[in-house]
Amino acid sequence: MSIENIFQSWFIPFDILNLICLVLVITLALIFLFLIIFNKTCHTVPMILVANSCSAELIFASSIFSMAIFTLTNDLLRREYDDSFCIFRGYAIYVGCYAQNYSYFLQAIYRYTTVVYPARLFWQSAKFQLFLIGLMWMSAIISILPHIFYKKFLYLVDDQMCEMPSELSFVPIYNVTWFFIIPVNSIIFIYFKLVRYVKEMNKHVMPVNTLIRAERELKMVYRIVILVTFLAILGIPYATFAIMGFFTSPPKYHFRIAYIFVNVSLVFIMIILFKFTDPVRISIMKRIKPRPNIIVTAGR
Image (tube, rainbow, N blue to C red; front, top):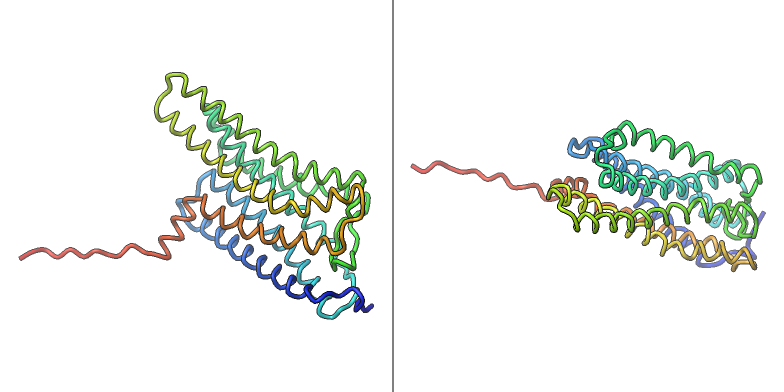
């Protein structure tokens, strides 16, 4: 069915911008994972958690990329067309979003555990962290069961995507709370708990190494807070339209506008992740600027 009457001139440029952002995110995530897998200095428990976050970003961006291709195709052909995978793409996007937010939550929990419970070595082990990662992905898949049960994903012709309409009902409130508010606020709560704990450590006589390690872990959690705060700021348009739907109808094409901010935020998230992940950053810089070989000749 033709959609000439709703087509706008800015659709195609925005579709292309979305695709450019998503290609960048997918490329950066693949580079990250490649370096973590093949660089032995990255074979540590914290880097396992970083790899999990990169995997979540990769799946999230790939799901949105598939939807963006679908949107661009329909816009170019100016048609109303709902293919058999449209609903699946909508589910995949929400699984990726859940995994993204909770992967950073797992990183914050690990940093907190190493400082507050340093003697609990099993909690800090790779085996236990891999168990938590598996649990996170299982819960990510289970988390979309309410969407399936209530059949909330619909093909929205104005936005040319399969999304959940913004309205006042159980599932949208569940999304905002379970997918966003709980993980983000939990990370911030862990940060302030860790700040208080480190301050208490400074008041007592502690081994220097213990204090330095605690301050280092606090710095890492602070970086995670910066990352999720940046994600939250650029996610404001999406959240605003979702909450607006509780009371009135959001503006036309609101999902097109919201996803621009989401996709741009993913690019910045990958850049920030690169900046804050020292082993990966050092490995890349070594490849970009290899150290020159210095040849010393013996004097005669």
